Image (cartoon, rainbow, N blue to C red; front, side, top):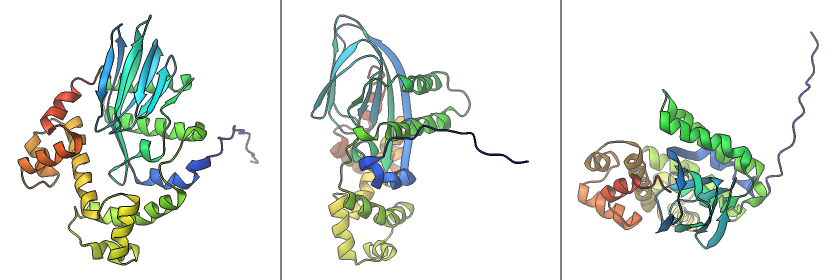
Length: 293
């Protein structure tokens, strides 16, 4: 039987500055924390803060002024906001109407520590993003009703949502590194993978061997493109894994400290507070109050 294709697809926009960054998604670690839809009444605001995870905000009704890092934007109906982890932000409702939005909390990292939203230069907002409303609403529905397998589906949905933004709005992105640094990061991936799989029980010489360079050159490259040494990278990875476990499990702080390789609870708490500004217990308490933003 003779057949021929009848499919005709609209092309995606040219990837532009994202062309060098496709490898990021092969090394991405994406986790869904939760999603809540809230109506925020007159007088609502978010005091200045930064969080150890990222937040997406989809506006259904009303208007609010947001400061995300150094950017100040106004979000109205069908606006999707991107707040990368660690970025200081605040918000104020603009009268006269209430502000209704869905807040999606997640982590999206490459190589265990680099926030993908920051690395790829996600825009502070996308206006007129009505086509994304269905995916956002479904995340809130999954989190509220929690049918069997909901966590896996939510993780897939968040991944699809982020990728869809890069495919359909690439001209809004401003990656945080030069193409040459992107190539170096990609080249270092085997060293990152070995370091993570052995929980740091390898020498710098072992890492240098897998990427075929000298230990001195490897240290220099880590410092240049990651901003830290291999040992510091491993500590950063452990801390972010701990934050994720605090978000998504009921394990005790002691159990999380043990699982993430810290020698004592006091060491874990000290390192965690130095990184995130609050203790592990305070961070877990904070999660219970983020449903309004």
